[in-house]
Image (cartoon, rainbow, N blue to C red; front, top):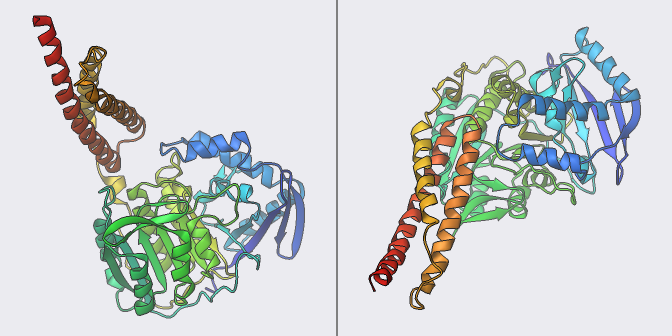
Length: 476
């Protein structure tokens, strides 16, 4: 790591309400300022809602959001100190500047810091491999002793891919592709230990104790306070507290990567409320989690780029540089999507190296992700099917349920419920059509069409009963 001369630019934002106080340090110099925004304010609540909506927000929106954050953060003396750091970087005084954010106020921590954009230089922090941004929590009342990052080769990577009961995630495919990509390094740099099937949090604890992995990579569904695992052969959301409990005793683990939606999502009321942040409190030196929903293909690309740089990049073993490399690749592929900013890295160690590796290089992985090379799926046949359904739905409005006989009135409720579900699913289909056509979108579209068709069968059966009654009354 001697040739990777990153210099820390530490920023601490503290206080109970806006305007917050800002303190920045760089190479022994300090500067102060104020920060006037937080996630509780109406404008920022709306911006966060748009980022979390699941549709592509657009490059102009992302740059405007990042520029707003940048201008509020880098003011007066803090701005001057940042300009000084940038001059050192341009002059060769450092290989990179690591921006380390310490944001104890919950409403400040909940802001999308990974979207930072310098409007003067027209540079997104995520797009530059020279400015990794990490989140730090070093208050002893929140985080206890941090275990050392360094580890010996070969690293042991526990790849946990529980079965997905919804069928939306191809966890087996993700596991197989990642294991195939890392296979050339097996035995020398990293050994991948798969954990699949219907395992519970206790099974995960047993695997951690038996395998003693250095890295744990979990691929599943998630939300702000839990991830989807299994219990008694039934799917269930395992709360962050349970995951933290099993990680407390897993002293071999240096890094956890949660490829699960919203596991890095902030809270306006509580510090370190998300799954990822609570794992940090277990003493883990490094945690990566997703602050919003993320497409399976984007999460897979992020993981592949991350491991490519972690094991074979210019600074092997440097977690923060590997995250930034993966983030920069995602930004280059699609700067209009916030997929690049969805992963959040918490790094509670002054040195981000989890291992040192001399004389061993990572065989080149495929430069272009399959998702970037593949021809976008054709949604036209599915959209045509949606239009036929809408025509059918318009015809159901002619059903007269007001004159049902007492014996048939019980069918009115299930009919109305089925029609409401059809209407809601049609709205969701229109929403999917607004974004770029991807394999994930196609899959979701087909699943929603299948649900509509099942409801259509119910409606047609009940409508047949109603029409039969109407015909009988007409005949009388």
